[in-house]
Image (cartoon, rainbow, N blue to C red; front, top):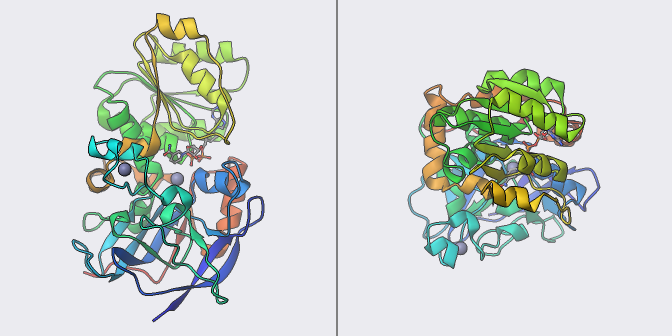
Length: 376
Ligand SMILES: NC(=O)c1ccc[n+]([C@@H]2O[C@H](COP(=O)([O-])OP(=O)(O)OC[C@H]3O[C@@H](n4cnc5c(N)ncnc54)[C@H](O)[C@@H]3O)[C@@H](O)[C@H]2O)c1
Ligand SMILES: [Zn+2]
Ligand SMILES: [Zn+2]
């Protein structure tokens, strides 16, 4: 049986998304049909829509989602219909060298970066039979999607679907960049450059790690005003001469920072982060600028300080462990994920949400699909 779902499709980079009716077959071996419950709109959707990372489309965008398991393909174990799952957008192959050595975030063989399911397939079809890709093997801007079984990660009972959706990308990326990639210890200082969904999640992760002080840095005064709600102890305006910005941040930290998280896809922000890095400090580069952008830094300074620059894909997370843990922290009130929600919207408002993200206005906008509710 095929089913018809509404989905927001990017035909090619630079064009607005269009709502279309697409068809989905039954889930195949190792696949799961998920009825979408909620999907955040992440800056990575915007990068792809603008063509920052190369040619693309037609593709169902969206990779920060949660949904309810509707049907299991042959051979799928450990999931049951009715369960709420947060969707993992980086299903690792499990067999390459990084995977075998416990670093699935650095998998070299996964096909999801080609906007295919882990098995290489692209289940969405137009009524004329042509294929439409699924962003990162998910395509959460759709009423339902077929995903690899490894992408569907159960979260604890009672997790709100919006929270589960945000854990699917921004929260995990930001919080785990501090908790795993950074290995931040209690009492260490953390500076976060870029206070969007990812950066504020890094701030929340820094609170969980017991970091102090936690300093947020952004170009938008409205973002600086909200940083304290997530646990930042100070907020610094990033506009102006980098030497002065650097001095303001150091003053707010009271010393050299131990860790700097760069949560904006912009070379200037990366350069500021490297400039700020203290002796023995770490720069965690999380934001992904348009392909081809390069940054420069004073090499002798980096060496003198024995500082490290680290690339951080997906917060170096292990989704099957970290999604339930982060959801648990949210349920305990220790990770105020819901404060990231700027507005709940319908699927037809996704393009407006991307436009708002481009203008830097507000935090996460979340598409809510009213038909999907977890069943007990
Ligand atoms: N590494 C990963 O696995 C991963 C995962 C998710 C997102 N990302 C990337 O992280 C970045 C942030 O995503 P987001 O959804 O939080 O974006 P966002 O648009 O919600 O937030 C970006 C923030 O950075 C601020 N900003 C812009 N330029 C700045 C500058 N030069 N200095 C300081 N602040 C600046 C903006 O005002 C905004 O508050 C994007 O590049 C996204 O693609 C990476
Ligand atoms: Zn994302
Ligand atoms: Zn691998």
